Length: 511
Image (cartoon, rainbow, N blue to C red; front, top):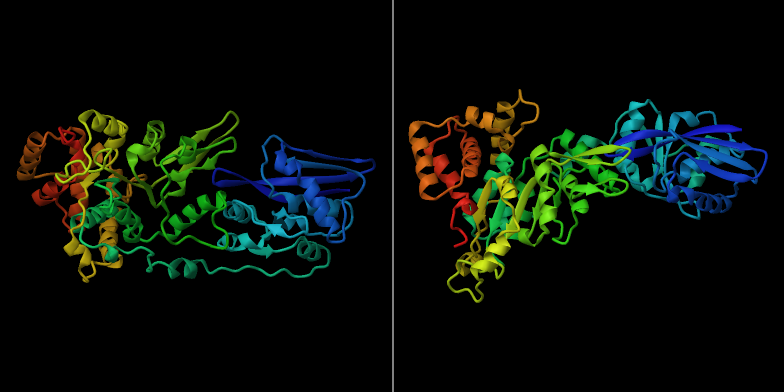
């Protein structure tokens, strides 16, 4: 007897429906075809034990299973439940007329209980697109799949529940999530708040400008000056995610299996990889391409602590994703594209010893050591960082005072207002949503300067030996400062503040 059951494979952040055809015939043997990987080939052992422990068995006949389309590679253990239901139906152990209305996925334990799978959200989106009535999957993944409306999502704990649902019409409990209520519930309670930061008012101002314009930022300062503390609080002042951004971000995290029991992500991601990370782990890839850290920080913040400690090759592979805001991974048989629109926040010590420019420094570094240390960061990478700011240690008087600083919620209101101005400005442009994304042509159009401002910028560039690459960056940052002040025109005071935020461009900074 021939039976068809439906599962799904995830490529990139999109799912493809897989038809599992099971044929039970006279003879002996178990044949699994359709480019399955080792995890799927091993599934017959898990299925046999799970069925036996629940009062069923794999029939001693010739079983042929085809996973169509047969030329597409299938990977992972998530097809166990699909295959098991197909075998039971094809061998006549259960009867069901409505198998074609459901998408079934899940990894089986030997006792028949179900383990969570990866990519439940993209699969649920595809199931709704293709008109399936319901999606049966492990209970741990039910919340993330239930984000998708107009699709019945059934989270199950044991294969017995699935068998009884199809064979005896026993109802399964539907998982229902109010997406909007879930999404707005966690918005105003950031885990890390700017009110915890003592002093550092100029750095806080810098962070506010970076958040308002989506600018990449690098913090340079000695150990203990608060670089990491400030970076961790940046997501708390970014504008709240839109529902569309939240879905997009949740999809990527779902593909790598990081959403269990969470539902929709409402906080912007903050990723902080260790400096020993490989280039594949950072940008994504592998034999079966998976999203890397830059895609997991999509719509959020990627924090690279101690930037010069990262391998130079690892940093260089970030150049293209920083520019294009997506990363394409090519393999011989297919290509996947992951979105990677993130804010880069980097921090570094000014020298290998950490105390360059400090007259009381316990350790000093030679010019050759300094040059080698700074040389790890290439010009083209620095070129993509709009704001460079020096962070100085906080004096004891500031640390010990009781007064709390301004909270993240108040700063975020100003940032959100500035972002709304930019959304309105760029509404006709497809790939530009905030100031950091402007190209040269748009900078000329939206950052027009009067004569006094032009002369101020000219003097600063000549006197401070600022490089040519700093010119466009200064104009972008000045445009954001003007937006924070709700000023239509970029004025002299905006330019002069933006000039302060280009420390590394000053020639002789190393000397």
